[in-house]
Image (cartoon, rainbow, N blue to C red):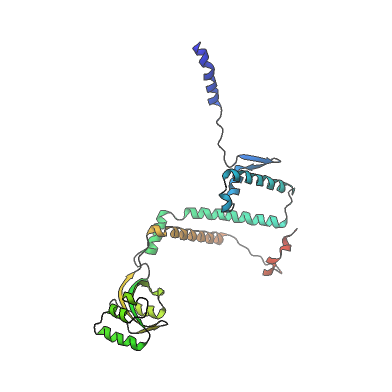
Length: 281
């Protein structure tokens, strides 16, 4: 008796296991048909991905229903044309197909560029020893006239401390701080000031220098080469440049290998690109 009680459930389990498992939905899963024309989950996925961000962030259940309804409506409208496509639309479709396929080719090129070894090589090439412009740590004394600047220079040559003199005489905002300008690149300064700093030795004091701000006496305290950024700080920029270079090289390669013809068209003038009537049916 117990065997008879367990026989049917066991048979049911065996039959259940023998049934094919239902496949998980994929991009080809048909979610609607309009007069026999399939609309798939893939169509909804792509439609959602191309929405403006403010719509992509709506709840997914709302998006699914709204997009599916829109695709169904669009399909009914498409079918209402009975296959007739205007010249304008036909050309737009050709342009869009060309652009989409070109973008696909570019994505493939970019995916192959920017590997770790390439990134490291690019980093070493760009940020190896000798990278970057020089930076300068200087101080200055700013006064209104050349005569004042010359007299201060005499005092400095006689041993007066530069920082003390800046605090006493300088009219610039750095005066209270001993004239200290901190570290800067030459381009951060007015040209007349920067040109003098570049030619100075560390510890040297300049002759009076005139700029639009007045007359300066400059002391160069330190000089250094700009430090290279870390690899991680510039990784994204390096990858972007590698990808751009790879795409440009691939386009040049394909263009050079292609047979490109530009036939002469009698009467063709550039302003004809403004004439939409040429493609209207």
